[in-house]
Length: 221
Image (cartoon, rainbow, N blue to C red; front, side):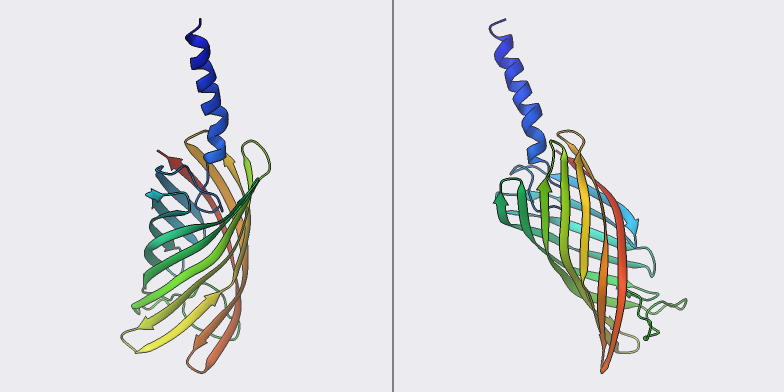
């Protein structure tokens, strides 16, 4: 019995402390240093997978793949988060996600009422280079629940090699959602948001809007 009680106390402390370390890539807090995770999300207009392979006290990063449903776009980059604030139950992180994209039937993320562009049934290969710069915030409201909020700017420069055309798209995105820590190894989350978007194509300026809805899961190991 004298050996069993310390063991039970240790197991209990691990169980109750674990959710405090659980943090998805959509939040402002990090997992425990040295932990790795698989992150999968489905939604509209994008799906994504990320392996967060390097987690330290102030930085977390890993390769990420995004696939936009329509118009079809595939992007590959490195998702980086840098801790800015850890104050009580609130956390804040800087998001930096440089990436390169490939598309064939149009590329725009937003809808532009006055600019008829970028969604086509004819193949026109294009290459994009850009970065998503933003701020991710999270607030722990209960033992396993977190509120998520973010401000993001997934800006992209698209080039059409065949025609020599190009344009810059700058969506301004506000997102809100929630994260639930199922157990020590698994968390699920949902986010919804959107915002205005600006498009620069030579001397032309397009003003539009966009929306996003996604559901994701993180599996830590």
